[in-house]
Length: 512
Image (cartoon, rainbow, N blue to C red; front, side):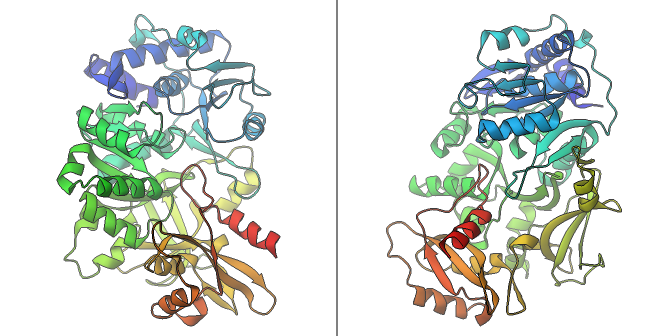
């Protein structure tokens, strides 16, 4: 079974079943989706594109995105979906790095030709209409033969330090992720619907695979992105939605539900499952989400290098309030997903006992085959079959993993290790604090000092630093307390809700 055969299977099983929706309107049945993707594959071959060549997708969420994606795979091509918020010059670097010849774009992100691209197709253009015209008999269009370890999706990392690296994800990696979703994350039925409120170019798009496996529906909001009121209305219109969401999106959904006075039962009519990940979800935030919206959450941990597959904190774990370690588990990222093994090791690669902090390692069929044209980075990341994630964490005696921070975010002050997330968790429980990010600042005497950037809660008085000091001293060791607080209107974030601590550190360096 290959990725195109997932679509062929549904075109046979339920040809007239709703497959892709744009808002509440049906855009394509499974047969139509397969016909358009097959037709695209035929025309890409006729244009001279050969299996293994790369094609760029530089677009906001669009109902044609999935049709193009499966058309590329049908033709044996490598999809290169990139962040729609990148600057065209950044995208052109990716084009040159991977050698992409064609690009599919939306006009709002690429209104001029990208350098290095032979043919650029805008998804709402007559050229796209022609390329995606339905094949009369999609089941007769041959699928390009590809090996399980051939690259299908080339994912470029965010590149917050230096140039991004191209993560090579194979059919085996993606199929493993899809099957693992059904086992560990959430069972999917035909009547289910996944909504793409987060970018299809990243984690949300990967979840199209398990939902196609089940023959479920794929819903692209009319806005093309995230709007809390729109998603609640859409869930009521087409049935409870599933979606992948960064913690910032979860917070906005919870805010909307509270503002509208919605009960957990009201929320259940709009949402089946909300899978969150991609950035820290703090204890106070998930407790509030469960209280307001009820048991519709699952947490996953993974990286681009092991897409969406690392650990999972299940709906059952989140709801197991009688368990004596329930609070600790809420603050964890769960246990290893079925397809992988997870270890925590010291700098020499030796396993650490429960409770001790080290680097998180992952091994299994979801782990990438390597970085595109970068054997040195591949050798550094994958050793003896284990992916060295760069994340620091600790396993407990039951196998639950709690992340501390990225290894590069660790603060060493006076010879003592300080994990910013612990300080952030503490400050988020202080009155008047809405958001917080903790980074290290160079200090000649101590090596580094702890600095907390804080966004104050709207409508409340700005927190007093003296009160924040006292709050920290009641909960964490004195040496972990921030040496100073910087109040800001907002924290710098990327397209997926991750705080850009590199920007904060640079701000401190420039100010100093």
